[in-house]
Length: 218
Image (tube, rainbow, N blue to C red):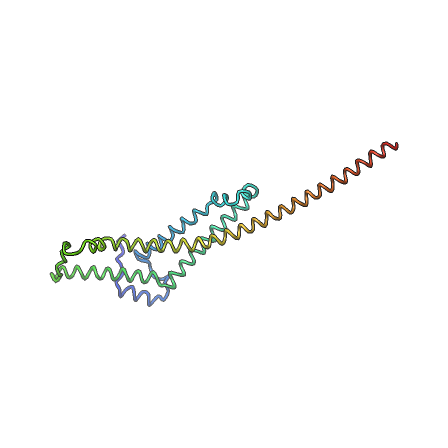
């Protein structure tokens, strides 16, 4: 299969205008990378919601009602994944992220083509000798593209992780409140059983005493 060439600026703009919807724009290299990073970050967060970690938060319920707790864990993981994916898709659509990244690729491709044409025509200006620039400027020039790319990736991952953590924290608090309510009901039931046992013990004691007195009279 031939490698797909990045669209030009005019092609990307026309595609965005004609479609009018972000989901109809095919993602380029940068957009696909952004989606892959988000999927990787989401997958890492969902792995933290494993059965082992979840059961460790509720050891008593895990021992007494493992099946119920497993279903709760599976539902939480499924709902978290679905909500995060839907929210990310809405952000991409509202911000027109894919179309804008495709336009950026088109600009880079156009600039590269213009530079090659200028070099072929012999109209390029001679580059500035590196020894005339200060060391800090040279170091910044080398590090800036890589650092900017990594900073953008880390920032996107941080925002996604913070959003997922807030959602997960709320769900865990709700589940913990439900577990505490369940334990409270179990304690109430145990108290009722103990009270019934005490009442039954008193009744049995009175019956034994009555039986003993009847036997003495006989």
